[in-house]
Amino acid sequence: MDSKKIKVIMFEEKFGLGGIETFVTNVLSRINRDLFDVRLVVVNKATDQYDELLKSLGIKPVILVPELELNPIKRFQKGLPAFKQYLKFHVSNSDIIHFNVSNSIDLLYVRLAKNHGVKVRIAHSHNSSATSTIKKLAHKTGMMFLANTPNYYFTCSKLAARWLFPKKIYSNKQYFFIRNAINTREYAFNFQKRKEIRSKYGWTDNLVLGEVGRFNKQKNHKFLLQVFKETLKLKPNAILVLVGAKDCLYEDIRKYAKNLEIDDKVIFFGKSSEVADLLQAFDIFMLPSLYEGLPFVLVESQAASLPSLVSDTVTNEIKLTKYVRFESLKNDPKIWANDVIRMGTIKRVMDREEMTQQGYDLDAMVKSLEKLYLEFYKENN
Image 1: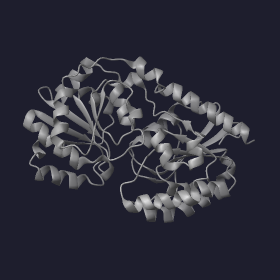
Image 2: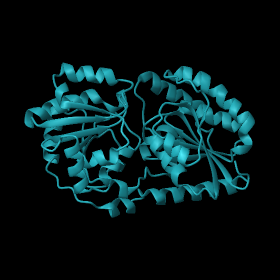
Image 3: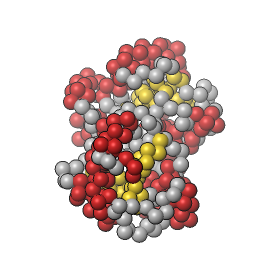
Image 4: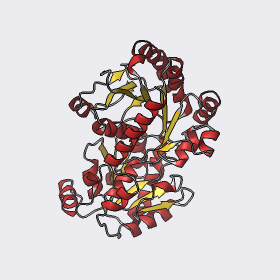
């Protein structure tokens, strides 16, 4: 690392495919390399999706535990001593560590950084709940002992701030909003591109429902399939396109679609690097999640002027345009299906300015982040 520059480490426990990785790679792609010397440190790396991008940026990720460990407890057992060892030899290369976290247990890594004298320790909350009672109890316990280990706090939403930050920090608003910004030009609605993609995949005559995300409990795929079954009764030409890596609950969701006898209408697309194009081709975006921080994919869908039907468990801070409609998970799938049919008639019009004004332009977000890094560095040196 260049000693003349501010040394910044972007840290994530499990680096896979999702909103955190989108945020991290967006920042690494655009941060001013004349001012900042950046490094990516992860415990586990679960995808090769970003390898070419990182290589083009000259960033070689530091992978603390090379063997992929899916069990989170075992991952911590291996990851914590590995990070401790890393800090022992590299703390001088750590002016700022930006910890991208989902729950308070991740703050164990922040505590290690504090113990090793890292002056700027940022906890960036990207989530707002957990999928099980055990995880929620673990989070609550972690909050009792670890909540004050960071000295700066970032969040993507108020819900995510309330989930992770100490009550004093939250109530006094002693935290910073870092928007889940995107390159709005890349996602802006393009009618010609829509025609091309729908023709490419043979969707020209279909009502296309789309979803992008991991196959995990949080994303609530079984409920989505129930909604889709009801939609087919109203619109037999409908199809559901599920975009995401074939991991976690993937096989369970496939079996469930078969049990509902709708598997011939469900496309398991797999992971994709062309999400921006797929959003052009969809007619309605579906996100019936049990919880979210502030989902990147809904920022992307709105940039594409794509009508999006979202569970009301997702923060209303994500409603940046008229294209989002919230519905309760307590409501019958038939009600959701009726919403789908109504939303399929909404006209899509490109309007990048609206989202840019609300702070979701990527270049503007990175500039504000750089300014905060500089402020924090000066305050501690």
